[in-house]
Image (cartoon, rainbow, N blue to C red; front, side, top):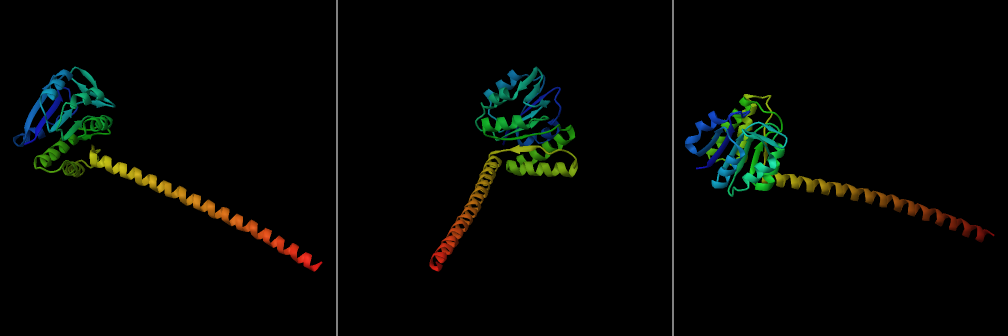
Length: 223
């Protein structure tokens, strides 16, 4: 049974509680709502281990909003570093992809976030489908994929969240390595082409020289 922490300040931009509450029978849910400050979040994350942390709040590039003010992505990441078995962090906040990347790199868990502003209805549809699949013991990527599919069916104009996890990081590294190999091959092909051109010039030069030698010898014999 997964242990889920939900952080949802009173003035949060998105309210995931109706969807998650409906699934609470399949999970242990700790809820921080109302007036939620960073010290309370730090205390809970230091004292209790969770499988899932769900952050539902206003966001901006590198910042998350709690009731007592803005929290930098670095401080939130330090809070999460107390977790030893965290599987996924869900950030229902606008423009939070950069924060997600920092958390993933520091904590090593999968992170779902948004590269653009997100509407409450879209966030609720995604949360409902994602947690339904997760509590059905589906892998995180499968739960994410199913939730995105539901989002497309329900709200086709909405922007899908992004998933940052180790598998995707490995794939990006592989793609980068492949791109480097392709570029090296292109450079090598260019060098070979240059060498062939140089050889043509070399043989052409020696051909002219040989022809001149033949002419000189012919003139000498003629004389």
